[in-house]
Image 1 (cartoon, one colour):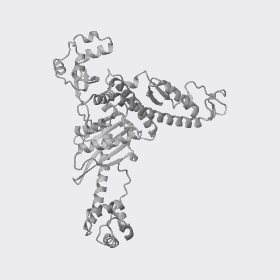
Image 2 (tube, one colour; image 1 turned 90 degrees about the vertical axis):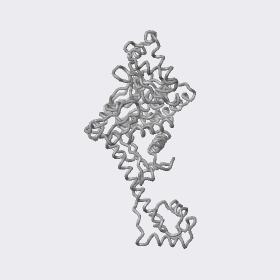
Image 3 (cartoon, one colour; image 1 turned 180 degrees about the vertical axis):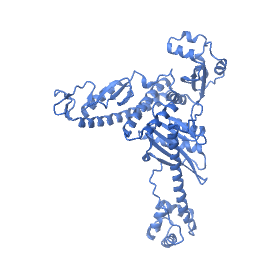
Image 4 (cartoon, helix red, strand yellow; image 1 turned 135 degrees about the vertical axis):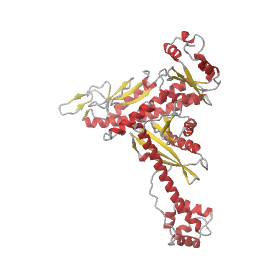
Length: 506
């Protein structure tokens, strides 16, 4: 072992379990410098500290890592596939210096479209820069990618990296010489505006292709894990991470509003720095679990895009898997339902998930992703009492200044989730009060009451129904239907409150 290694590290290694898990290597300053997975934590971690290991290892990078290890933490899990998922999540979250950051891996190709050009071209590159370009990839199969680009040139009439367009005196452009036939039906003489439309169409097509390849990679990753080919599964997982990240940036680039106040951008940037995220969290979703009169549990989810509410993406949930009050089970259910649906629809996960609550709620959310065999995005909890940010890993809780723009953005997100949940609560309470009117109608048992509500959907529609329409419900005759209609229109019967909330209940 390195001479500077503390004695307690030897004890930690000696007492590690012979079980699967993830290990986090730290330097003398407590920084995580490497994250790894293991079928047996004891055997794998011990191999780093065999006598003379640092001198015999041929790779300089591993030798340097061993020399720097001053402490370690481990997280025990139930299976090796679970260790694989957790390892990837922690690498993505911590970005340790001795783990390969796949987004910077030069083995795989990206497609770059520089929107600053008069005629943007679709070029291949291995380096992603922080510029105004759009990037697609990385793509592990270069041959398939090149064929796809050739198809796009013929289908959409776009320029690839080898294009040499000529500007004509009238301001139009000749994309290719007349002898070129790649454009087929698309004209070779275009205005900049017409060409921009071609670029937009081609980008939409390539983004769709990327999503198809992403689903294929996910399937290959899970199949490899099922065959216990964990090294291959880990490599595929890294490609999935990078491709998801690129697609997310592409999507959010399109949504940026040039009139958005600078404060939103500052909040996103400061939140990225505080949470050590790979990029600004331009898409965020927050979950809140709420109780209704102490008997029902419901949940709300709100979605922010570029720091602003995107109400078309709001969702409300009624708990289906159990009856009673259990915040943890409720959180696991709704998180699982939300992201199972996104995955099935081929949609991207948000950049950041915020859970209203502490470590227990975060654990429930992580459990949902493990049951989905899916890699979670960045995930935090926000405990309201002291506005404490809770992490799902070994990081200590974080308290930012109340004037911190990133914290203020998280507060707006969390408060909006509360507001949306409270609105749902009020709707359900009003509905319950309206439906309770039926309790006072003599001779109406539970089955007939349920049949009425199932048939008409609400008290308001029942009140508007004719006697003949009520009589169509099972268990009702003409006399009883007439009596019920008369009862619902008595002056002393409370009138319904119209429900105008159109948000989706998932």
